[in-house]
Image (cartoon, rainbow, N blue to C red; front, side, top):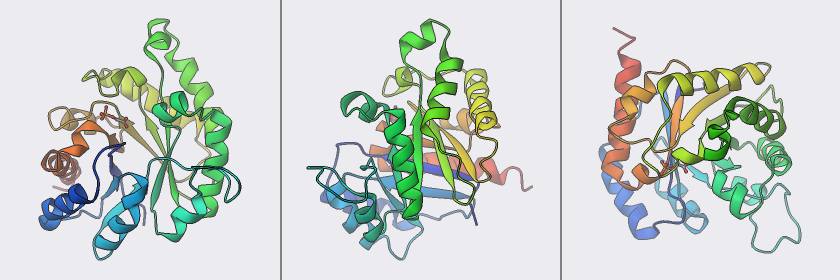
Length: 250
Ligand code: PGA
């Protein structure tokens, strides 16, 4: 069964084994909701250990990127095949930091998604406009193009698209509720032939603003960078999502 929301913490190039064990301690009291998947996305070398320590729990583990080929002469790259062998549940592809620093193009992202699906890993595909595109009033067209070129139409597996405006990442600024709603609806319309689609928001999500973000009807979770490094805050964000969904059950 596919959950309603996904809350994922992207550790980026931070933390190691010590913090992984700290995370595990903080999450000892974690009560997972069947409505919200939780995922941590640590650096590559500790993914296997993370899978090991969370094997009896509902905590998912992801990777921050991977190559689109399953194997070959690609020094320093990591294959979706290997990530699947070590039990990776999710992989981010097309994060803006990968697009700008490592030349992950829309075509690269699309091919990566196909390989991940082939290996039964759920892709988290990031899209988002720059400050400059926003200033020019070009957000809508920019996202439309990025989505159509990065996301393959898949009808038998879950696809997660994360709307992450680049200017919102790590800046403390977020779009208005109307802006988020408008872009999430655009993504849904563009991908309306994908039956299992989740559209989540990323960019400066924290304990203070998450309630407002989760209450936007088209938001089905969050990809969290900075705030996921504070484990108590990450847990509070998760619990805020649970509280929001539970409010519909009464
Ligand atoms: P942030 O990062 O939450 O620190 O803004 C989000 C991301 O880069 O995925």
